[in-house]
Image 1 (spheres, rainbow, N blue to C red):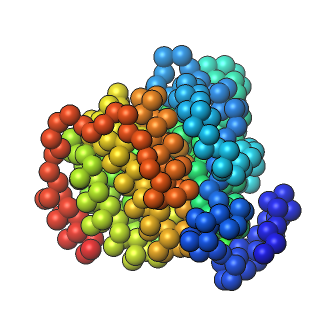
Image 2 (image 1 turned 180 degrees about the vertical axis):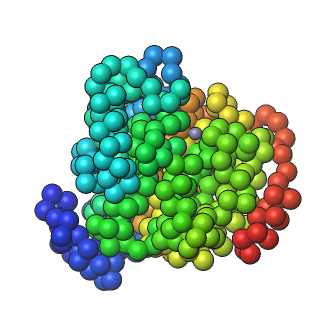
Amino acid sequence: MKLIPLSQVTVASEVAVTRKLNDANRFDRPQRLGYDCTAMTTCYAYDPIEQKHTLAGHPEHRGRLASTMALLQQDGILERLRKIDATAATDDILRAVHPSAYVRYVERMASSGLNHLDPDTYVVPGSYEAASASAGALVNVTKAVATGQAYNGMSLMRPPGHHALADRGMGFCLFANVAIAARYAQRQLGLDQILIIDWDVHHGNGTESIFYDDPAVAFFSTHQYPFYPGTGAARDRGGGNGIGYTLNVPFPAGVGDAGYARAFDELLTPFARRIRPDLILVSAGYDAHWDDPLAMEMLSLAGYAALARRVVALADELCNGRLVLALEGGYHLDVLAHGVLNTLRILEDPAQEISDPFGPARALERPIDDLLADLKNLHKL
Ligand code: ZN
């Protein structure tokens, strides 16, 4: 098969290209795992422009990706992956989710020096460029996966996006990266049904609000609750035509590997099979780790890897492997770096060994039987 270089794929032709690839030419996983086709590998996007968005003393600072990229370089995994450019999202792409006035507001606030969009969310000169590239990187990875340039992929950019509302930045997030990629996949790449999985420890309130009434973008989130930003109750299941397409799993503090795995097996798996997505997007935050300084869940790195394996298996089962991850939170620098490395290993080959230098949580995890039973009942799963 002759793959069309991304640079030659115009927006007008993408739908046709995508459909053609979907229908006849996608490789199955065994072929890919044997590296029979070097084009169908895992991809990633990164650009050092993200370093321009930083503030000393703030948890969401440039050291997060500096340490992660250093570990990935040291490991050598990036040499096996396809690199995707993190070009800035155009105004048209951003405006599929954000009003033009908000996009200009972020640009203006950033250009005039240190400002805050809310008490948690800083902008500095360079933040607009970094945020546009963070959104654009995820769009480009999505395009690469949807058009058959890569089997799956991950955008390694910041600032994160899942708290950003359509018209307001919050929670360290400027633009709603995952929502922007979902809209792009639907409108420019011809994919109809999207499933967003959010395993960041905080509820992805921005993503949820953008698609709350929309059955074409389903949303599954595990998060500590009650906790920042305060949303994500079990009863919030979508509105209007979107009722039933939002599944919130509000965990008490102290849930670990077993609880998360059960939520993915007993809730996410039947939910995803009901949704039948054409693409799975993941808001991948690593702040549910037991040693993260901002939250109180108890996942280990091995537990995170087990979630990643489940998501890869769901994508293989439901949408020809089409799976795109976006980096969200994660504030213990070494945990974040190893979490991302393990995730990339699993995207490349779910059977690949992972590393967990931090080991399991040091306390017994909190049981969640009642919560799971309630959610199964509420969502008829
Ligand atoms: Zn988070």
